[in-house]
Amino acid sequence: MAKSGVKRIAISGASGLIGTALCGQLRNDGHTVLRFVRRETKSTDEIRWDPKTGEVELSKLEGVNAVIHLAGAGVGDKRWTSKYRAEILNSRLLGTTAIAQAVATVKPDVFISASAIGWYGETGNRAVTENDKPGDDFLATVCREWEHAADLAGDVRTVKIRTGLVLDPTGGALGRMLPLFKFGLGGKLGSGKQWWSWITMHDQVKAINHLIDSKVSGPVNLTSPNPVTNSQFTAALARALHRPAIFPAPAFALKLALGGFSTEILGSKKVIPQVLLDDGFEFDYPQIPNALEELVQL
Image (cartoon, rainbow, N blue to C red; front, side, top):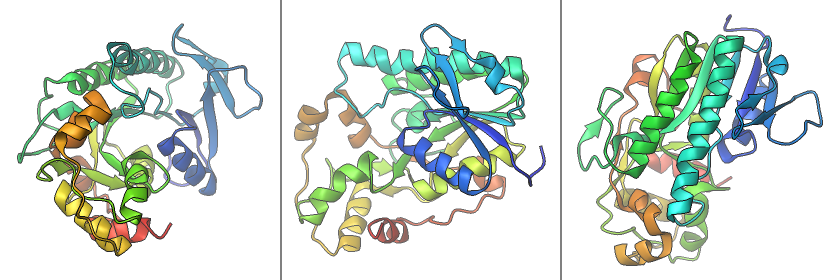
């Protein structure tokens, strides 16, 4: 696949936070973007699929250069009841299995499949790279199964993107924090000592674009090379907004409000994007102060 020229790229999860930004950028770059949908198709740029039955409209995938699989139930969307835990796991397993098997049949140049830094579990103050073993908590188990399902793509170059905390003012963690901080009601979460491995949406999309053309395969951490503690993050956000950050959220309150997902807010993950750095990728926003200064203007 040549680095230049228009590509045909199929994307699942195209209506999600990352998928929307990625589709927009790829189209701006002149590529043809096809979107996986679970309903009957309404236009030529849609591909019907059903993760529960494994059905994928293979004829529409013929001739695609890349398949990017982002679909899956959001880990922070609801409280982690036993039912929702099953949905988090099954939405990833079934969806990835269906897409990967389709990829093995149509054989695009590359298959990029979503994963998350949840793979590493709790890392404390220890920095981890793609070579580190998985953790043993719920999300680490999900990520392990998720990545294993992507291997069904066979001999197609497969990239498993272990995404960190994606910063975008319209959604995700930053979208939820901004209203409080704008009113001067923000502060550190829990002890504030936990490491947050973050990336701007801009660099997230840029990295995925880079991986389409790269020769890299296997796991790739999509995080800034400079993780920060939650205290550093909240202080930088308050400075960017010219507001104080004096209202900490105690751990017990977060556990009450968020249930199991609170472990992702209070837990510590210090993740380094070693593969991207070794591959020559350059982050436009490697430092949190500049990143947040830019994001709060959007």
